[in-house]
Each structure stands twice: as structure tokens, then as C-alpha cells.
Amino acid sequence: MSDTSERVKLSKEEKDRRFQAELMPVLDPLYNFAYRLTLDEDDANDLVQETYLKAYRFFEYFEPGTNAKAWLFRILKNSFINDFRKKSKQPAKVDYSEIEGYYNPDDVESEGEVGASSSDMRQQSARDLIGDEVASALNSLPVDFRTVIILCDLEGFTYEEMAKVLDIPIGTVRSRLHRARNFLKDKLERYAQSMGYGNDENSADAELTDDENN
Image 1: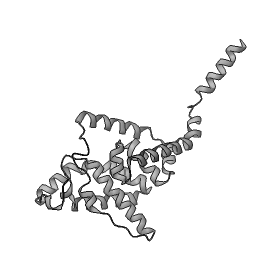
Image 2: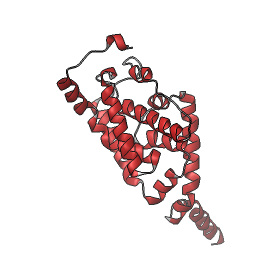
Image 3: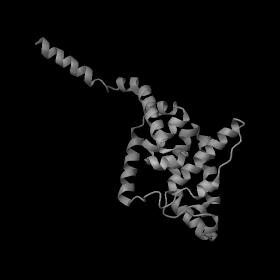
Image 4: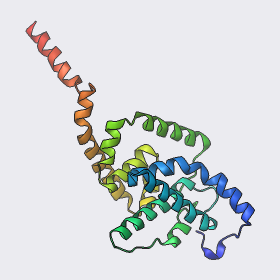
């Protein structure tokens, strides 16, 4: 694991080049995450801007070849919590020593291009399926539950990555995700029925009754 003494000082040109190449492609999913947390376009834009400013300031702590998306999501999550606590008059600080050592290559296996491509396709498919009713139900969840749904089902993070982004044990990730999905399922049940889903069992029972009567 790297520490401050092992940071490699970069020239401004090299820093700008690498920052643009490695972190800017995450802009769209980062904004989506920020919007789902804040539920406000202006707040989401401010949060993304703050995240990139912090990421640029501490970019020399980022290890090339590790998960840039998860690194940025963690910074954004910490910024969101700090801002929330400030508004609640509960001062808090982000420990950037945690960001510095966030991704150790020994802890997380790098994904191949094929795996990354498949993950992107799954994420896009999931986003395409989110209609107004689903988005409304998701947004109505408490932020802790909303966050795990976003990270897992929309952004494709593994449990291990989610645990690091959220600073919670993997067991808590699994439990929180299970509860979040149940909450979301309950909220969507009436909507699903109105769209014709969930009626197969009733239809099958009706057909069975007709067959018995015949």
C-alpha cells in the first residue's frame, strides 16, 4: 500500500493528461450518483464539481490501473456526508489518508476489457429500464438504502468495492442491499400489477379451475 512518502510527483502537464484520461470518463455515472443522492440538479452539479476539485488536488494518491470510478465515488460519498452534516450542524472531516490507500492492487482484482464491456452493457440496460415510477420509488428510499441499490444494481460495483466506497463491512452491504431491494419491491408492487406483471399465478389458477369444471 502506498503512503505519502511514496507519492510520485507529477509535472502539471502529466497530471492534467492523466487526470483527463483516467477520471473524466467517469463524469456521467458520477453525476447520476450525485443526483440520486441529492435529488437536485444544482446540488448534484455542485457535488460533482467539488468531487473533481478534491480528486485533482489529491490525484497523486491515485494509483494508475486501479478503479478510478470507485475512487471518485468514495470521494463524492464523503463530500455528500460532510455537506449533509454541515447543514445539520454536525461538523465532519474526510480522512484523505483513507482515500490515499483506498485501492491496493493486492486487494482488488483488475477487470479485463471484456468484463468491463459486459458490465457497461448491463449498467446501460438497467438504466434504460428505469421509468418514472421506478425512479420515483428509488428516490423515495432512505439515502442509505438508495445508495446501495445505485452502487450495485445501476453501477455494477461488487460487494467488496461497495464496502470500501461506503466504509462498512461486506456483511452490512449484503444486509442493507437485501432490505433495500425488499423496500423497493414493496413500493413497486402496485405499479408492477398495473403493468400486467405478477398476474401469471392468478391466470394459472383460473385456467386450472376451468379445466376442473370441464
